[in-house]
Image 1 (cartoon, one colour):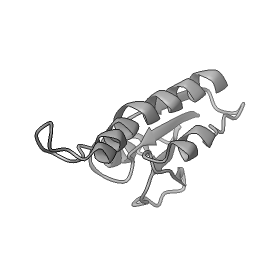
Image 2 (cartoon, helix red, strand yellow):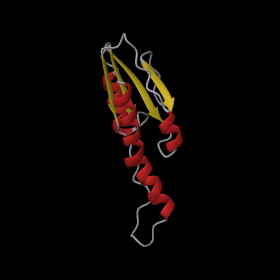
Image 3 (cartoon, one colour):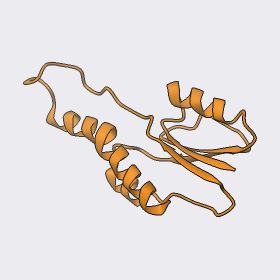
Length: 115
C-alpha cells in the first residue's frame, strides 16, 4: 500500500491529483487542507491551515508498517495580496511566506524525520 500526504487536496491540482491517485486500489491519500471536498474509503482528511505555523509544526505523520511507500506532496499555495511593493500590508507578506515557504519546509522536515 502506498500512502500519499497532499496539501491543498480540496481543490485545483491537489483535488485532481488526489482523485487520480484514488483510482489505484494500492493508494491511500491523506489530504491536508482547510476544507474537505472528497469522500472516499481510502481518503482521510486532516484539517490543517498552512498559515497557522503552530498547527503545522505539531502535525504528526501517521506512518504504518503495513504501508510500502510514503509520499509528501506540498501542493498548496496562496497567491495572497497582489500589489506593488511599498503598498503591501506587512502581515499579508508574512502570511504569504508562511503558506508558500515556511509550512512546506516544516512539513518536509517532519516527514523526512519520521520516515
